[in-house]
Length: 309
Image 1 (cartoon, helix red, strand yellow):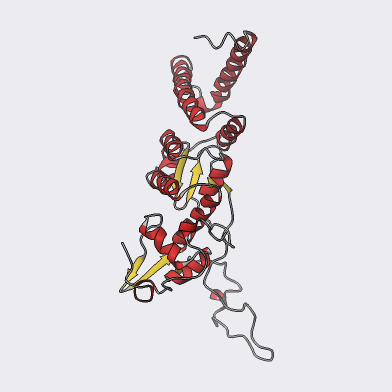
Image 2 (image 1 turned 90 degrees about the vertical axis):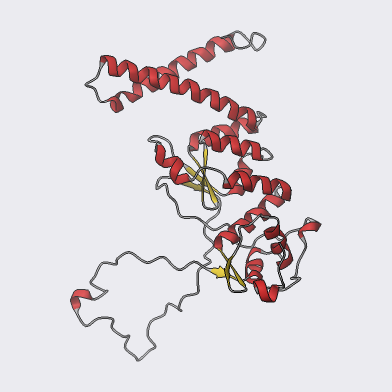
């Protein structure tokens, strides 16, 4: 896929300024990754905040000196000063021509066209012969630049993008069973890469998506549990490969499901009139105590003994 000229098809320069991606050098974005609206009200957010790319508004000042500001209503019942503010309509999405988008992302038009031809960004909206890009394209370009600076190759980023885009939607993932005691965490892709330096591969990303640890929300990733995210990152820092952490997580999930079924079966059989939610801490205490004692037993045998079945 090629453009028929920047002026006709994309509104940008044919060559642009700066460096070519083939040379491996990219300008670092001067503004942070834009935020995406949350679908999970209790989710923490890791990464950078909105960079304020909104259409320019007015000066914000009042009426000139010596003049009276115009009134919006002569009826006190609907006077804005006396009426509680209603919901504010969202600002229309910001759109850019190709040269504007490249300048915002700190790359050249040639680099932007190269990324588009490689499928690293989604196609623009077409209006006649003009291509229009939005803040989602800008966020993706900043992610690409950030991942390149962290040592990822363009081929690797393309694979990550494919895995990322095939992931389960965050609203679907969190809506199936909303965690009652876990805090979801919102991350930019580059923040996720920082948590697991060198371990964010397409295979590991696909495994985490399959487990339900990760879900996709626009240009952001939602991790379902702050505690699991922190523990996984700590294990990787201690030298445990992320693939091994995820494999262990899958096995733990199997045993945890079995323990939950055992506890619920016990209560339904012998305490059917009790509110099971109020007895939930009892199950957690039993599991924690048994796991603690099991660790004591296995650790006492020494590393040479290894775990027993």
